[in-house]
Each structure stands twice: as structure tokens, then as C-alpha cells.
Amino acid sequence: MQQIIWNSFLDQHFDETTMSFHIKEGRPIVRKKWFPGNWKPVVDTATMDKEAMKKFIDNIYQEIENRDDGFIEIDRKLSKVLQLGPYRIVIVYPPLSDGLEITIVKPIKTLTMDDYHLDKEVFDLLRNQAKGILISWSPWSGKTTFAQALVDVYHQDNNIIKTIESPRDLMVSDDVVQYSFTYGTHDEVRDILLLSRPDYTVYDEVRNTSDFELYKDLRLTGIGLVWVIHATRAVDSIQRFLGTIEMGIIPQVIDTVIYIEKGVIQQIYTLQLTVKVPEGMESEDLARPVIVISSFLTKQVEYEIYTFGEQIVVMPLIGGENGERKFESKSKNAMSEYAKSTITKKTRTTTAMRFPFKNQRHFNITSLCPWIIQMTRHWKSVSKYQCIGKRYETQDWPQKFWWPSTPRCTHTNISTKKRCSPWNRFPWGIC
Image (cartoon, rainbow, N blue to C red; front, side):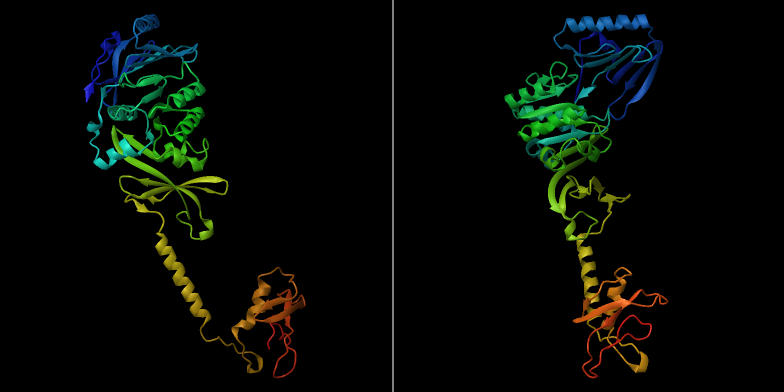
């Protein structure tokens, strides 16, 4: 861990715990203090009027002109973004804002990978295996600080590293080339990176559709990527890619998602594309391409992403306070289906049921087949159904009965040599 010290007139407004400095004309100055994820606001009694703020801005521009590490990153009519060494400066003028506003942000300390106390398996994943890395969470969580530590690891292995920043506020080695979209388009930066072929490219931060397209193009060419993205959950950073690039390409360009909260790695996800039946579904006919999102730390599958109709579903598989699975395992479903089929088969092969009818006649339950067929059709039945090797024809039954039509058996009884006929009001014939 190393404290950042710079030689600038802005140093007087920052100490070792000040993260940002917020000024609005005529209002008390506010400082955010402490470390990423644990900051708290501190309100000063001092204020700046409009004239004092204009003089403050002039001093910033004068220092930028006299230093090699000072840049005007964004220059619009009513807003400016400047980079002065480690200081990122945002200036907003009325009427875009309701008053002149200045925000200055500075990283407090730089960390190495040793400060994160990673186990060997995680460190090997980040150093040698992962090539499409997303670092996610909300602002002030330590994403950029971790990206800087990861760049140092790649630099120690003598990799060629380039960064894309706007503004360029990563504190990295002078061997690392830093690009900015302020002075070049996405197409220009893409062409430069594809022609120069770096080993790794670090992007801080992904914001719009052009950034996602650039990520896809660079990763599919084989360039290792480390991109910082804002998301409240690790899976949300993956969802931000849905709709901007094809779902089937996502596991090819994103293989690792790191979730950082309060400067500590809370979760690491790995992605894999497979063809399977999604959890919660049982029919094998529902098999489809599924993106499986697994926790690298617990080795459990936590999410599945798949298409359902015209929708893309992100289905959580683990929920509740104890982290229990939302769906029972496939083995339990298979056993239930096996038990159900066994019981059904056993029922069908038992001794035929017999029913008493007029003149003490008995018949097998299969005699009900014509009626079952009749009830599964429209009320106006279609002639000639095939059932149990016999053919049945239908005719309209008098409307006073609640059944609309009745099957008439055309089978000739072997013993009586007579045709069977419907029996009173029952819709089935008895042979």
C-alpha cells in the first residue's frame, strides 16, 4: 500500500483520507473522507463565491499548461473534464447546472495484489486463465484500484498493456500506454489496438453501446481485456451486455466477473455455454443453449441465462437466507417421473375392472373407450374412431340427453351373431 503524494496547488485541499472535494458557489465546501466503500461526508464552514471559483479554475488551467501530465479530457461549452496528475476535475457551468460547480477526485492509495490476500487458485485464475474480465459494483467500491493492481501483475510478466480511459486517471507504470476517446473515435482506437496487438487492454469505464461493441471486437481477436463497469450485482454487469451483443457470444468474450465491495472481492463468477434443459423444466424437448454462471469461490451454479420465447431469462438458482437451491435436482425429478410411470403401468396391468349392467352383464373397462374418445372431441363428433381393434361410428343422439352424439358399435358379437346396439341412455355400446 502506497500513499499518493503530488506536487500541485490542489494538494492543500486534500489530506491522506480525502477522496473528493465538492464546491458549489455560495455553498459550504464538502469533502468525502476515508477509504473506498467506507467514505463519509465532512462539511466545512468555508464557502466560495463565483469570483473566487473563477480564479480557482484559472489556476487549474495554468497548471495544466505547465505540466506534461495535465490534459483537457472533455471540452464542451458548459462542462469541462480535466486531468491534472492524479486529480480528476469536473467543472459545470450554468445553465446546465443551477450554479457554478467544481468536483475534484483523487485516489487515496495504490494497492498491490498482495494487499488483497488472494488464495493461489484465485490468483492463478486472474494471472494465467481469465482473458475477459469484468470488474463491477457501484462507484467508490474500489474497482479502479483493483484494476490498477491487476495491471501491475501483468506488467511484472512483461506483457504489453494499453488502457482506454476518459479521463485518464489510472495510476500505472510509464510503460503502459494510455488512450483517450477525447482525441480519437472508437473506430480509430479499435484500429490502433488491432494493429498494435497488445496482450491486455484495460478499459475504465464501460458506459454506452459503442463500448460494448468495442469490447466484443477486441476480445474475439484474442486480446485480453479487463473492463470496469458499474453494476449493483455481479450478474447485473452481464445483463448490461444482453441486447447489445448476441447472447451466444457472451461466454466467448466474458469468462470472469469480479464483484468488489468496500475494496474487498466478494464474489467471482465464471461463465460457460452449454446445451441443456434449464433448471425447473423437466421435458427433454425444452433443451436449449444455456449460459451457466457459476461461483468460482463456492463451485456452485447460481444463475442460468436462456431464451424463453422472445424473452431472455436470467434465472437465479440459489435464493433465501441460507442459500438453498430454488429448484430440486434433476435426479429427484427423474425419480418422480420413474415412480409415476411405474404406478401407471401397474394400474393398467391389474385385473380388469368389472361393472354390473342390465341383465347382469359385465364388460371390461376398455368398453368405455368410445365414450372417452367422444368426450375429448368437439360436441359434434367425427365419424369412425379406432379403439381396441374395433371401429365405432357415431350418430346424433336426441337433444334431450346431455351428450350430443353416441358411438354405435359395428362389431358383430361372435356368440349371438347379432350387432351390438346402444343401451338406453348410455353413450357406449355393449358387445
